[in-house]
Image (cartoon, rainbow, N blue to C red; front, side, top):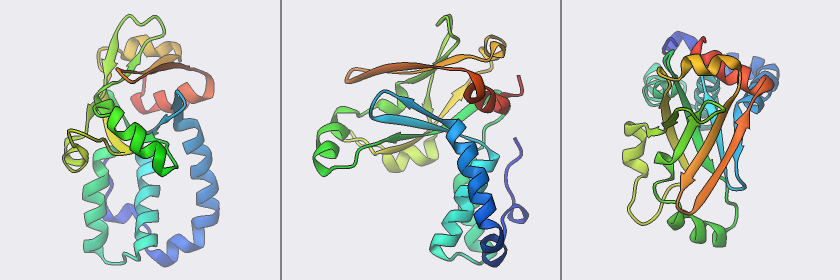
Amino acid sequence: MKRLELADILDLREYERVRPEYLQKIIAKKKLRRVHVGPLVSLVFENRDTVVFQIQEMARAEKISTDEGIQVELDIYNSLIPDLSELKATLFIELTSEADLKEWLPKLVGIEKSVFISDVNLKEVIYSVPLSEHEKLLTKEDITASVHYISFNLSSLKEDLTVGKFIVGIEHKNYNFRVEIDGDYAREVLSDLEV
């Protein structure tokens, strides 16, 4: 997918005018791109639309109005836009209490390398690779972050995904779950691969 440029991002006043309708559209899209894997983890499969939204909302929240400021956000978030043979996702460890954070974040160190995508027969399993520019800021030996950015190179699996179903799983010593993705959810995510 084509990387974002300054011209792709609306200025703050323009964005405020279209934000209500835009928000409805992106919420519907993100709903089809969110996959829950077990009780604590979800993935949002990112694409150009979700990244534009992230940058627009960041600019709005932080009142970024200069080209230079927007360019900083573009430089950060463009790495979340997948190429044609890959999927990229934001991994969320969904914990809300301080006690759960203290219990689970040390237990889930390395989870960002433990996520996989496979065909429904588990013939080939592709594990996640952390996006290095983000991971340098997040990686610690004794505790993990609650958000990670990951990538899957699916070039060897693309043909098997044309059936419109796939499995997303996590194989971690303290967290082991998988879920089959099909229907509208699979169509939405797999459209990024142009299979």
